[in-house]
Amino acid sequence: MSMRARYWPVMVLSASLPANGFAVMDDKHATPDFERVLGHQDRCYELSASGSSNLPSELLLAGTSHSPGVTRVAEARSPFLLSVDLEGQSRELAFTAKTGRFLELRGAVRLSDDAIVVAGVTSEGQVLELVDRTGKVTQTAKVAGDVNVRGMERGSANDFVVYGSLGSRPYYAGLNRSLAVMFERFPAGEAASGQVLKARYAAGRDGLWIAVQQVEASAEKATVTLVKDDLLGNRIASTEVPSIYADFDETPGGIALLYYTAVEGVQKIHVAYFDKTLGSGWQADPVQARLGVAGPRIVGLKDKVLVVAADEFKLVLAALDLKGKALWTYHEEGPSLSPGGTYLMAHDGAHLLLAQPDRRGGDATHPAPDPSCTRIRVVRF
Image (cartoon, rainbow, N blue to C red; front, top):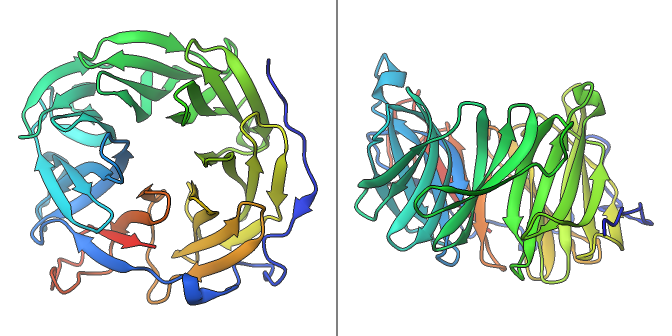
C-alpha cells in the first residue's frame, strides 16, 4: 500500500535566521576536526563521484586526473579511485580502462576488499568495469546507449544497483558481480519523464529508498517522489515534494529528506523528517542560501540531522536534532571556494567526512600548486 504523506505542524529551524542566509546558533560544536588536501602534488584531479562500500566508514572517491599544464586535458585524463577513511588517511588506486579512454567517472561501489565496480563514460561510450585491488580491470561490460548512469549502490559482495534514466524515464537496475543485469525497473511508471536521483538499500535490507525526479511539462513544475520499494519492486510507501532535486538519508528512527526551490540564484532549502512509513514527522522552516550548490546534501547521524550546503560559495552546515530543533550552524571562513555541483561524503553515525574540489591552493603537504589545478580537499566534522 502506498502512503501519501501530509504536511505537519512546522518546527522552526532557527528563530534568528536572517532572510538571506544562515545564522550561527552555537559554534562551539561546529568546528572541523581536520582539513586536508589529498592526492599527488604533481596531479590535477577532477572529482566526479563517490560510492558505497563494504568497509565501514570508507569514503570512496572517483574521477579523472591529469598532469598540470597540459594543453589537451581530455587526452591526458586517466581514471583514479581514492579510498579515504574517517581519520583522513587515503590510498589511491590507478587503473586503465579496457574500453576506450575515460572521459568521466559516474559512480563507484566496493563489493568486497578485492573488487570495486566503476561506471564511466569513455571515448567509446558508457561502461562498467570490475577492478581488483591492484588496479587491474578483470571484467568489463558496455552500458546500453540509452541508459544514463547517475550513481551506484552496493547490495552485497555479489550484487549492486545502478540508477539514473533509460531514455527519458527514471530507471534502476540490479546487476551481479559478473556485470550481468538481473532486473530492470521503472519506479515512476511507463509515462513519466525524469530520472532516479538516488537509491539506497534500507537499513533492514527489506527494500530500497529511491528519490525519483519527474519533469512532465517544465522544470518549474517538476516533482521529486521519495519512495520505498520492496526487493521485488512493489511500492511500500511514498511522499511527493515540489522540487527539481532532493536528497535523503536514513536514521535508526526514520528518514530525513532535503529538497529546495530556487529563484534568481537563491535556494530555499527545506528539511523534512518522516517515520519509516513516510507518515508522521516534522518539517522545518526553509533556509535560504545564495550562490550555493546544485546538489545540497542531508546526513542522518545518531542524534542529529545535518544539512550540507553552500552560501556565497562557502561551505555551510546546519544541525538539527531529531525533533527538528536547531542546534548549531557552521559557516566556512576564508576565501570563497566554488564547491562544484555537490559534496561527496561518508559518515560513521557520529562523524561526517566531506570531500570537494579545491581550487584555492595547497597545504603543508602540497605547496605551490599549479593555479589552474584542482585538488581534493577533505574535512571532518
